[in-house]
Image 1 (cartoon, one colour):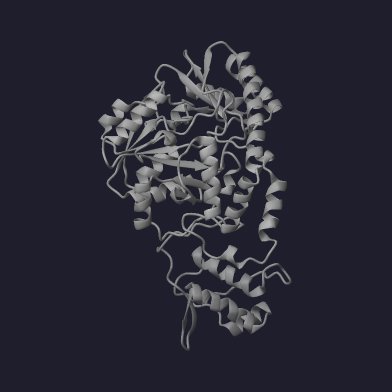
Image 2: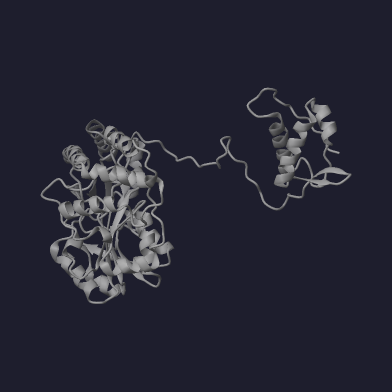
Length: 467
């Protein structure tokens, strides 16, 4: 019989029965109580520990229910056979699995995916939230329309027509919790057996999604105008994923001629479609915003995807997709039964945010803020060194530095890290992991840093790269 010596904490945070249960469980898991070994009876253990018998019985009942011990009539309790079945790794104190350290801490992070959350319109959002919930409206908490609430879809439709030149009706719009969900839904709508081509370098998340959803995924090289349509033809793809208004990560703006070539490619066969990701078109600092490719589409070939993650906040988790009428029919046949992934309350708040003019004012504020940071970064970089050129400026929230010479991308990133500045290499956006052979390219995002931090971070980069 295994004798238990347990140090119980009277009046502690954990009940006594739970302390007994955890002690015995750990002894069995660690092998200190062998399988088949008999445990003390509840009467003997309660007397030994000077606790009530019901306390010990509660602990044994929990161990029994989880399979750590077995009860044999007229014989007592025995440790169950669990050794050799699986190695149970201990959790951290908070119950979570151990997490590897994220590594080096950085003073400044030029992430190209940043959003300035300090400028989020908290007061307005709270006000609209209260207005939406001021009355007892049971309808708000019923399951809504699978495509998204009609009011929000109408508001998005009006905004897209005015700001992006998108030609659609609310019935063609689907609202979903982020671009990832919408692209997974789109894959279900279009069906398997498709071959999709993406630009290289590209948005790696889209590439991973298509690959993991069993699409035949290819990449097509780019020139200064965007995806090369001659290579797209040779790829044999019937879908292509492009970012014509501001390609990520290169920042290329696709000119009208290349857009027409893409539309012609799509119109040549019935099953071809273009997926247009218009992820940050709101932020342009020189000239007028570039109209969406969808606005030029006369044959129903462009599937348009947009998001509020960049313009408002990532946690809003609201994106939208505009389907051509033929694809809309496919959606209703194949996926119309899938419920909306966005709360009706959140949809109503965003609807009011757009309809009452708050969204337009917020965009104007953010454009001015990002433009100021963009201009500051350009001015500081021009004084930093002579051996790089800048591209991808005047739009979005990041730009690129192109270095020609002996230093590699890896070396530039390492030198910056030694000064506490995190920068990003272009090579990680190439599907094959190999960037341009003749130059090292570094991405600098500026949405997360104010002007003073940008100035200091560039000063440190200058020290790191030029001494």
